[in-house]
Image (cartoon, helix red, strand yellow):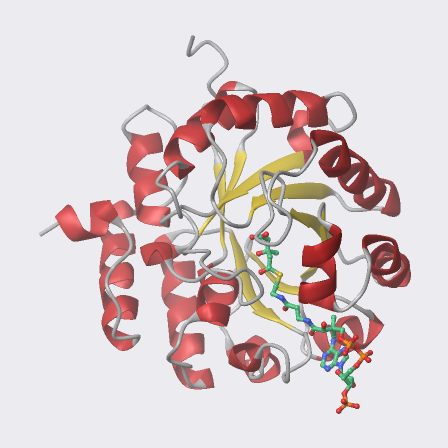
Length: 299
Ligand SMILES: CC(C)(COP(=O)([O-])OP(=O)([O-])OC[C@H]1O[C@@H](n2cnc3c(N)ncnc32)[C@H](O)[C@@H]1OP(=O)([O-])[O-])[C@@H](O)C(=O)NCCC(=O)NCCSC(=O)C[C@@](C)(O)CC(=O)[O-]
């Protein structure tokens, strides 16, 4: 049953973006910079540090340019940001963003609510971003939201996730992150989805991005890694959610993922004790409960 477990797993820390974009308390640019620097020191090699989207749509991300300018850059680490269109890409390039992400959805309604356009139109907007990124040698990650269900449409068909994922891959994304935006997935649904995606996308180009709304995220992650997935998105202290998915709680907590993996003999390169302290301190700063069970249990 555990034959296929990897020896190492890469964790993409999305707290500074997916986490903070939906918190009621907006942090100052300096607080975000300190937060990201702490996450670098804890050992994350990939940190999603901001988002170049409309500040009218997501005001919490408005200081992403200041953040990108000032964070400490460590060798061997990549600091990425969301760029939904060429405007976002150009802004990201002005502040030395090392990797960008374009974000589509498997649900028409979610695509409209999140990006004000249909799935097809979103792909048309992403294509020039991917093309320009290629010219600049900037890696592009592709997200697909609502892979297990949509807050507006309910069930989503696996075939819709597969075709949007493949379209992003064909556009040049080096990795596709499958987003369970509202955390409704369960292990058997995860298995069916990943098996279908693996028909068209190699396992080393797939990542999973679970929100923990229904407490299923760790079980789903375990299912995913048993199927050969070795890149997991998570957010310290389980911060955040999506502003255009009402009721969606935070991402699975990084501390909980690291605890599970380390105790299964899977290396992440992250110092769990230090990570727990970062989770406690950011929760205090945001005046919110710590969404990590491990963070809460630790003295
Ligand atoms: C996509 C748009 C921009 C389209 O928004 P739009 O209104 O259709 O775009 P527009 O081109 O008509 O522009 C409208 C205004 O926005 C400005 N604008 C336009 N583009 C940019 C930009 N890049 N950066 C800064 N400003 C921008 C533009 O300049 C203009 O300003 P105005 O003339 O009104 O002053 C808008 O819908 C938007 O920003 N949406 C935000 C979506 C978002 O960030 N959602 C959360 C992230 S996705 C997520 O959380 C899911 C994920 C990835 O985590 C996976 C999962 O869990 O499912």
